[in-house]
Image (cartoon, rainbow, N blue to C red; front, side, top):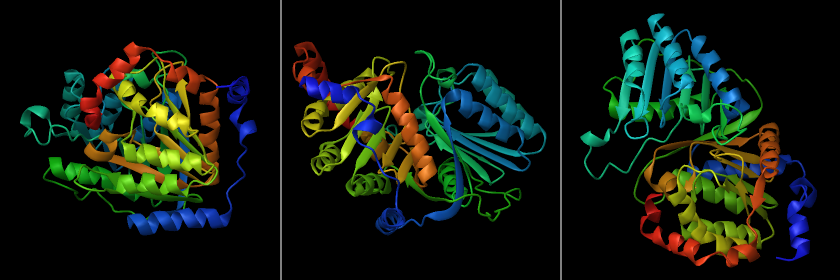
Length: 407
């Protein structure tokens, strides 16, 4: 890389490649592509609030739980330990004791570390707890297919989804390595039904009763101006909706495509889509964990694609302060994806996921602003230095190749 390249990488990205606001034609074009190619109708009249890090996410979730009057449905991959785990459990138990129908769906692998005292507290208060595919009760064919969805639906009118798990790692504001960086959204409007359907789909596998008299099946009044499509990913043979969603968004990019993900391990096809976008002049920026990650093996597996991506002009950055756990994609200032899915084979092929495709300039602008702030705390992968990385690192990358499809 030349000194000129280094100076360009150091300038604010908004100065390097300003993105004009979206026009009505581009918004309609991406909406129709998503609707026709996925066969999932988008809904109008939604309102979204972007929540960054535990200091914003958990108070909002707890406020909604504590105000529930009819039903609470919650599902999560991670439910571990810490004060927030106790606070969530206490709030769910309190609402159950007050007569609210509370259902909690935990992944049998991801939530295996939950404190047994919290389970007893919730169960004794009347919380209906179900486990998704507990490993000891599964056939070997199902062990690898997990419920990675995160969803909270309160009174059928408000929903939350994104990347956050219920554990102390997500508390705080990404100020140090013990406070992870993540993004969640609060959703109101007709698209809440799509998040509720993601919960219902997995609950139906684990429980005999899908709904009861406390489900009111409310109609939704318009709450805002956002157009939202809810896309569910599930383990299956062949091509699935989540893969189509990502392909449509990447292939629709004309000016800028931004991706933040906790686990980056795409196959050659999706890495090729990113390269194709860069070759046609799209500014492609990928933000990944840096020195702080909970899955070093996934980092090593994803690094196999760096040579190809960097050679095509894709820019790769590593977040420095703490674990980058957000799952965000933005497109041309027009559209955004936010949800539970990472850009890896596990999310695309093996796990249950839920992603919101959002057409709203304000939401997209907020996510882009957060992305800029995160890049200011990140280091770029420089092509020249990467090509001369050590033999030990290359050997470690090669060692994980046999398990890449499971990461």
